[in-house]
Image (cartoon, rainbow, N blue to C red):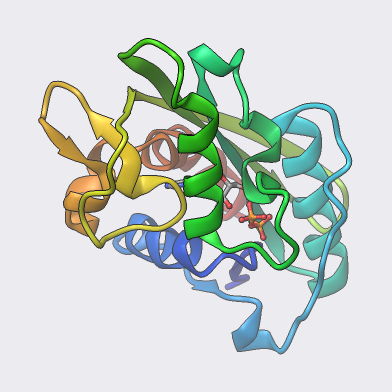
Length: 199
Ligand code: ITT
């Protein structure tokens, strides 16, 4: 049977997709497992364009059906920033997740709370022949001014799930995978994947 390639270089996403796909009956591999190193320039103007670009590039390079995720954090008080630029949101060269969180909090400092926000994920699944399908998910909450928790990645320590009273980084992987934007998009992608792997 053909395998699904998890088409991302983000280790946090890889860990989550491995859990989300476990039990689906679909066999999957990571780029490292097939010795594939590919950096795709994310120059699209929508999540869908970037996700498609990544999925198609990985599918063409590997010959495998490939699942890419383009995601981001949208903060209302910042007019939706960092959004599409979430992975690059810091003026510091070589910035890491912690630098991007610090930059976000610095930009929000003088804005009235609550700093309502949501995470968005668009998944693109591409066949090596070019066929492509999409699925989306969102997760709503607010940004808080101090970091809490050690799980997840990216902006998770400052993203509070208001109803649960916990940040995304205070959830275990299993809990995050029940409610996150990526989990919701993966659930919506399941019928697409099942149809692609049927033959
Ligand atoms: P790939 O393109 O290789 O998949 P990337 O990290 O560059 O990896 P994106 O361009 O989609 O991926 O950027 C998404 C950024 O949004 C990510 O780097 C985080 O900063 C943020 N983000 C997305 N999902 C997140 C999550 O579940 N928790 C925290 N931050 C998240």
